Image 1 (spheres, rainbow, N blue to C red):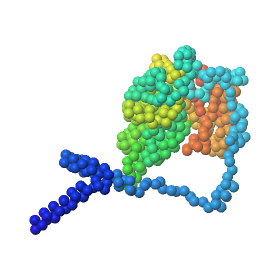
Image 2 (image 1 turned 60 degrees about the vertical axis):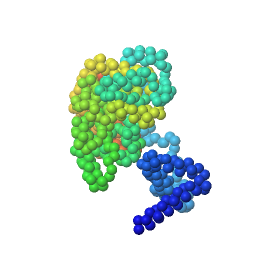
Image 3 (image 1 turned 180 degrees about the vertical axis):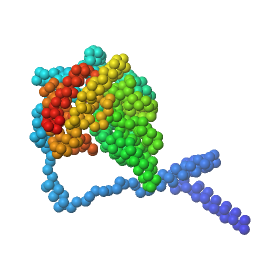
Image 4 (image 1 turned 90 degrees about the vertical axis):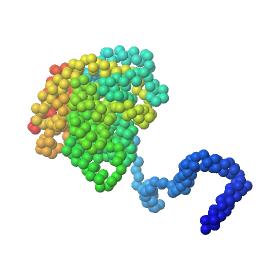
Length: 507
């Protein structure tokens, strides 16, 4: 039996050898292939196994069904198409303004000369400017002007190129280093526009399928960044820790039920709220970050240069390590009175943005004159420490007067916030039965009244048809360290008088 099996095996091997020897007669180049296989088998059989596996995998991949995105197109009949075409009306390039909007446009104050704490108007009057984010009073600073002229003569007006090509100058690298050292982070990156910083940083790290838990009161730039990222988003009530915890717990429960894969997850909020003037509860956010395995994106566009002992922002204000914040975004347009924005964090976080931050990669870099101005602002902030104390004294003085106005409400505005939102008190709104449009009209009348008394203020404006959670109408006041105590007191009393006049007997 064994002899018979051996004979059959010899015959099979002989047949295989005969076939292999005759293969070159039928397939050109097959002799080289056979020699390669024979030598490889003798020297390294595992290599042959690996290569055969790769060949089979490649064949399976090439022959497998191609992936197609599901087609959700709605098929319309010819009649339906014609009906839609007949009904379509193009929107005008310039929409028709309502009577109230036209009145506001006609009465927009026109300034002349450089901006500052005291603004000269076209009609010749000089108003105390309480509408600009000139918190530290650096607008019009003579030191800044001197450095700006010197930089302009050395570098010109701009680089005309993105940072990754030929747009990076030595002053850009120095500014990034200064910001990182000031905040205590490993590195920092600067963008040429403040608004596009946060709206570019978010989609650089968050993609379709990822998850963001965002504050309802987030500013418009954050909303646009989330929209661009196309991620899943859940909102929690503005600065409401209990609601945030409820949202995070619901996400955890959904994960257990659906067993969905873990994706990148972020909590997004502002340090100092643009729309409400209050401060985020950072310590609780960090607790939730560690407990629920999230990362934090913190927008300090308004709190940078204002909060904290040195003006280093919310982390310094609460005394928490800056390393607990994964992405710290700030603006150089406000406290530093320059332009552009920055993102600070670990070196890996920053390096990723140099290739994936769209506003960094595809926008012309920040002009040297503005980079130097921002560096100068940072330097003055660190040298003249009395600036922050002057700002806080002015905030306290202003609040002590306007808090006593019974017809208005400051809401949750922080006692140390240089931004104050003054809204008509809910009781007054209910008594007078005021609609949103009525409130806007009353507030606008108050703005005009205060302007006649020598103070430039503004009503908070929003892109109402694009805001996800439109705040209530308000007058937004910006306090500056450059204002004198007398100016602050006169401004507060002027606002008090104007509200009493506009709201009549309900004062």
